[in-house]
Length: 107
Ligand code: HEC
Image 1 (cartoon, rainbow, N blue to C red):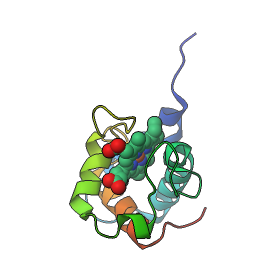
Image 2 (cartoon, rainbow, N blue to C red):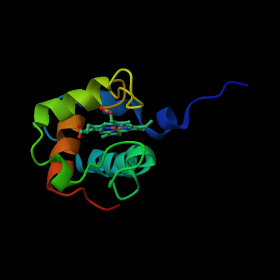
Image 3 (cartoon, rainbow, N blue to C red):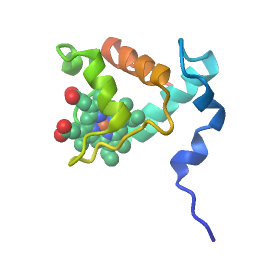
Image 4 (spheres, rainbow, N blue to C red):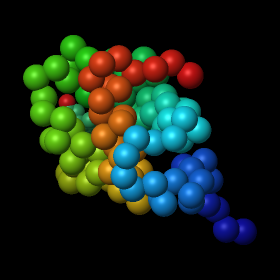
């Protein structure tokens, strides 16, 4: 029996086609779910920190958007933060960072 990581089941392949511009409404809902569930498992269900750093607007205020986006894209080697580039487009990542910096939506 082949075991596919749940993470990949949860993310439709069509998402990879969206490379520019703001994610669609449907994609935005998927991203909120992904961040609350998958990122939340390390960063806390309220994103206030856990194994990972807090991702609240206060915690991110003085950090440049580009650096945060790069961390999500490529992960941080030597830490538990994994790369997300295979399932999140640049547009997805930018949207997530902008929302994290201004207050992430609830599901
Ligand atoms: C397996 C655990 C884990 C998961 C899952 C995870 N992270 Fe992280 N993340 C970390 C850790 C640990 C760090 C801190 C790395 C360090 O020490 O520099 C981090 C750092 C970050 C940072 C940098 C924060 C800062 O203040 O510099 C961002 C942004 C981030 N993660 C976003 C995300 C997002 C978005 C997701 C989901 C798409 C995610 N992470 C999923 C563990 C995780």
